[in-house]
Image 1 (cartoon, protein in one colour):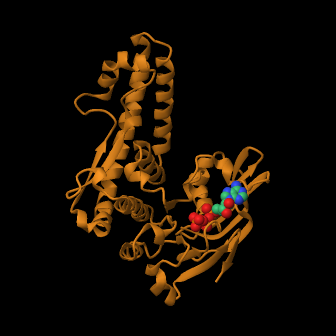
Image 2 (spheres, protein in one colour):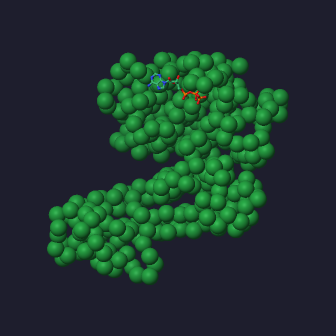
Image 3 (cartoon, protein in one colour):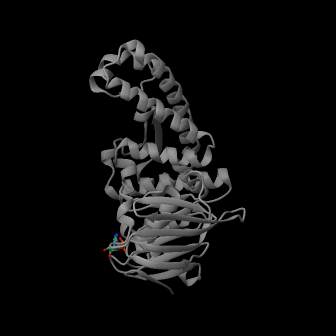
Length: 360
Ligand SMILES: Nc1ncnc2c1ncn2[C@@H]1O[C@H](COP(=O)(O)OP(=O)(O)OP(=O)(O)O)[C@@H](O)[C@H]1O
């Protein structure tokens, strides 16, 4: 899929922006604070309904303005066209698909898939487990129709059980919620384990290309509870502890996964640059898997590529990008790895300067 056009109004430094994007590589260069990352942030917003740099969507609104909009004309691999919009008026956010308001924002997010590598992406490797869970869950949202339903069922059961735990319940009162929660958690764990299995060949390939010095890579999955007993038994065994703490201590909400290299057995053995390459391998593996399962590449955003990776790794990354994928890259300078592609005319270049963008 690709964005043919991106329009922004009152989005961060951009009062008004309207750009036509190439279906292939798009490069945005400009000085610090020009607004390059904000363009990728807007594209990411159409896919995730949140920014990758702040949990607070209010900061996206241009200082002093009361409304903002992000509009994208999306073309899918099957040549289907959609006009996607996210609007904020006052404190209210609304979504639009082809001019009408969908029943839920999920409909819009399902249409547009964007994978984004940015300076904070190393959190996927070194950050909390929640980062890695949402990586799996985002991929599953796009490849498994039923996943969202199951995820919501699990969230509901967890919320109810936790609410009950805070009221010092009798053990018998927890029973029905244990059954509901354990049932939903087992389904989620199964989805997640299978998804990680499906990613494995892509991830192993990319990780060994980007990080060949670290030897073979192993992937492991932790569903969020020990396999020595069922989750239902575990929940029952943890009653006293869960009631004392007021929350459920084991289950799919504690799931995690990890990558381990033969020659760097602990995560702490990785340099910051290696963590970033590892995260990039995960994100591109997710993009490749999505392309092969859905027959359509997600849009790939690479923020500040040249300052994140050395020239050798930039070249490896550029080589491993899907030829059919739309790619948006930012940088204060042109990344060296893109120079040959620019000579071939394969890159559409834009100059960004404090809130305005010029196609070069
Ligand atoms: N809500 C806002 N309203 C107005 N301007 C904003 C808002 N949020 C950020 N800015 C401005 O937008 C610019 C930041 O843009 P962005 O982070 O996209 O720049 P960049 O080109 O990626 O910079 P760098 O190369 O330094 O990372 C800054 O000039 C900042 O002051």
